[in-house]
Structures are given as C-alpha cells and as structure tokens.
Image (tube, one colour):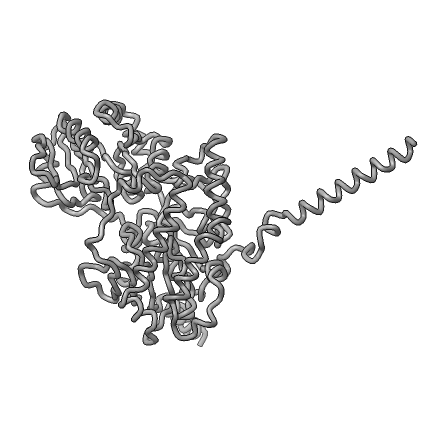
Length: 504
C-alpha cells in the first residue's frame, strides 16, 4: 500500500512540474535585437510542450510547433539612419528614449491587429512575459489574463527598471549605459551617473510615466480594465526578471533572487558554413577579419570620409576580410582580399579557427558571441550601450575602442595592428571565454528552468523584495535619520543652555 501511495505522490509532483502552460509573450515595440535576444527562449518553451503566443513586430519566417505569432504591427521597410543617434549625450539619450518610446507605442498599439488582440476575450494564459523597456504598459496583460508576469530585460537593468523591483542601483559603482562609463568612475563620471539615475528614478515619473499611462488607458481597454491597479503597482508586482547579461561581458553587481542573468541564450553550436564562405575561410593563410556593425548600422549611411577610412585600411591588410555590407555605389572599388554580403552567419564565422579579429559596433549580442569564441575585438561604438560595452572590453583587456568621430586611417590601422600583434589581447579573450562558459547550466536551460519555476509556484511571490511597499523616506531611513539628527540637535541645545546657565 505504501509504495503505491509514494508512486502516486511522485506521479502527481512530476505531472505538476511538467504541466504544459499557455504562455503569452508581449513585446510589441519594433526593436529587433530585443526580441531576437529572447527568441530562443520562446522556441525552447514551445519545444518543451508549452503553448507560446508571441505578440511582436518580428514574427518567425518558419512554422514552429506550439508557437503562434501575432503581428507585425509596423512596416518592415521602415528604417532609421543611425547617424541621427550618435550625437546623444547622457542627458539627451534619456529624453530620446522617452520620446521614441511614446511615439513607437502609439504606432503599434493603434494598429488594427493589436486592437483585435487586446479586445478579444477568446484567449487565456497561465503566464505573461513582457519587455518593459519603453513599454511599461505591457504589464497590464497580467491583469487582463489574471496571470503572473515575467519581465525580459534586453541588457543589464537600469534605474528605470530597478526602482520597480527594489534592486539596488547604487550610482557610485553601477553605471548607466548612457553615461558611457564603467564601474571605475571618477568624480565627474559619478556626477553624470547620478544625474542620469535621478532622471530615471524621479524625473521620468512626471515627464514620461504619465504619457505611458495615457497610452495604456487609451489602447488597453479590455473587459474589466476599469478595475486595473495603478501602473506603478503592477510594475512592483512582477514575479521574475530575466536579464540578457553576464558578468564576463558586463559588470558584477548585486541582484535579488528574482533577477536571473541569462546572457547568451541565442548562442548555439556552430553550423556548417556555405561552401563559398567555408573555402574563403579555410584558405586564409594569414587569417580572417570579420567586420559587422549589426542590423541597425548600415555602412551606406556613414559619411563618405568615414567609409573611405574603413575601405582603405582593410584593403591594405594581408589578412582576408569579410564585411557585412552591400555598397550602394557601383563605383566603389574593393580590394581582392575583401568579401561583402548583405548577411553572414556571424556566430558560425566567429567559431572558425582562422578568424583572428572581430571589428564590431559593440552590440551586446555581438560581444556575447565573440567572448564565447574567444576572439579579440576592435570596437567602433555608435549609440545606446555600445560605448559602455566597449569600454568594459578595454577594461578587461581583450579589445580596443576606436572613437567614430575621431577615426582616421592611422588610428583605425593602429588599433587593428595593436590587437593582432599583441598576444595579450588574445590571451585575455581566452580567459573571458573560459569565465563565460564555466557555468553550472547553459543560459537557455537556466531561463527555461526559472520560467517553469514561476509557473509551478503560481507567480513565485517569495522571490520579490520584501522592501516593495516602502517609500523612499522609509527605504533610505530618512525619517529615522531626521529623528536622530533632531535628537542630537536637541541634546546639543540643552547642553549649551545648561552650560550658559551654569556660567552665568
């Protein structure tokens, strides 16, 4: 009898652990790198039997079992000249994020397909996964479907996110990417970091959050929306945050149990290369340099003088060069050592042993791939967190940063020569690769585990900070400090009064 009871108990537990769930992913803003960074997680969850519905502007181009796309909500031909963004400073970059977020939100949330999904009552979900970068209103999906919410952070969490989770964002050593500083900050850097942090902690509550609430109240009207809690309360109630970061690529900082780093989920074992590309790499006796500025930076948008610097320097090298680029000018003459193309399998190329250098814009996914494959870097950052990323690369010693505004043939050529000739860069890249790979489980498996953990424990409220609910006066003990100071002041005044009384 007892073995039978034990067997039934184990069977019930196992059934609970492996129960398939209906999962909604709500990431409507058209920021491709943010969606693609977590795409492997969505597909892996569907492969493990969960029913995954993804609301995004970037549907898959192939069918996947248990996976449903809703979207897109923008014209895919829309583009942005990256040169419009490169001149942002630490203050205007925060303001730009607020402005663009509202503009994009109104565009996607007013789309016909989005309205149909929001107003539909035919769906039910056990778990909601959202990205709150520029789309904080997404947490309202948790209220609509009465389900726990997981937040997906595309990079190391910043003050705008940490304040809702009550995660310490100490300005003295945790830099905001907008400041382009590392954790080793001098006075000026700490001042900039504090200004940026206070803008996100307090100023955005008055200049940005009301507009976000307006978007939510205008477009997220579903059955029962009138009983929806305040946006701040829903942001405080997030069950778990998955962060696309790792200390081997970023910085080391304190996180709560409900903040899980899963950087590098998209990295898979290398696949066979196309025959022409394989031959090009295999026959490179002097090695190959891979040059790619990601999906947002098009070399054709760069000033002609800057483009000429790249072409001239790379054309004089003895190494072969692969450039992700199709010239829009037929008169551009390229050296015989250069191969160009509109797209290349970056992960698979970086895994080839003949690749000896990666020239990159410093995007997070690119750094994760190059660290995984132990390749040194020459980085030319443009905007957002790219400058921050490359300064960390320099600090860790496996790459060189070249300022785009000051770049010349001499400075660009010298950076390439230094990284290739100084074996220290390769050695440091190998060390960072070993640190990154030395994990108890793969990032994708870790992400799946924690998603299913939240499902198993009905939102896993025990992972949240116990400080949620305290205001700043209570959290930082300002009220206690005030009482202590007043007490000391009162004691000092009494002592002075008695002293004067005695002396008189």
